[in-house]
Image (spheres, rainbow, N blue to C red):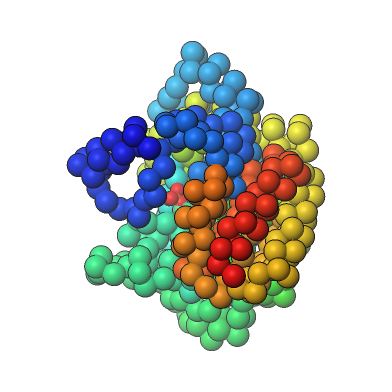
Length: 395
Ligand SMILES: *Cc1c(COP(=O)(O)O)cnc(C)c1O
């Protein structure tokens, strides 16, 4: 802990305290394993808040970045870059017919999505966007407004206008919130920060129908669920619908910062020169990394592995639920997994950390478990035996 303590002290002095941190300072990582600067090894079942979706330092990503770094890191977006074109093509070929705007983060991808909707509705005087309670869309001013959780907004008022929240998975609530000013609906197909709340099939199809009938924009925030984690490349593909706009970030860049906003059909040409921009968006180096992620998912058959390992991990967790009374419910879509507890999750997650397993706790009592898509049966066995031992301390 010696080296870690020193870094913690430096943070106290020099870094703004915007996070509740745990004293863990990582130095290197590979796949589902990470090591701290004092040499301790951990199994990482929440790699980088889902950023390292295909595992830490995936060899294809590392190779792509290393090679690209010697050629070209950045070009301004008033020139062309082959890699940005290739990446946009990869996103579109894996989703729907449309076009992509690149940013550097999830919040910015969502800002672009909202700007598409606002611009589309502008001449008709429609600007309101309906979002869901317990949602999470990022930390810019517009996105804390879009986010359906009061704790992110407090102290930052006045907030931008034009967002309305309704309960998740409640189609009637959406219908009654629509006015002649409403232009869109924005939601996560699976609310992750909100506690792994999974949209039902009827709900998603109902939202699609409403948007078609009322000429509204259906925006899906796939920042956390995108790139294979739900067993499909994008979570909406589990519902037999297409969104009008989809946003990506987190695992898209294999560890590098990138965001993307993809818009379908007529929404693809709403933003025109001068209406939106991002200096760093889609630079050659991050595009090369993201292309390597697509490559890995395809060539290593990671969607199949995600579905298979997701089912296996869910079974293991159901086994733990049968043994430990405080485990209330397991909610899972492939490797998007929440374990709802009837007790506080914080102490459990801290005990897991001590025992060498990294997971997350959200909403106070929901353990969030999202191993990399490359996870193996043995790693799941190891994690589940750690969880069993830790859970036993709380029975
Ligand atoms: C993390 C997250 C965001 C925000 O992404 P940043 O890159 O932190 O701006 C937005 N939406 C969802 C669903 C997320 O999980």
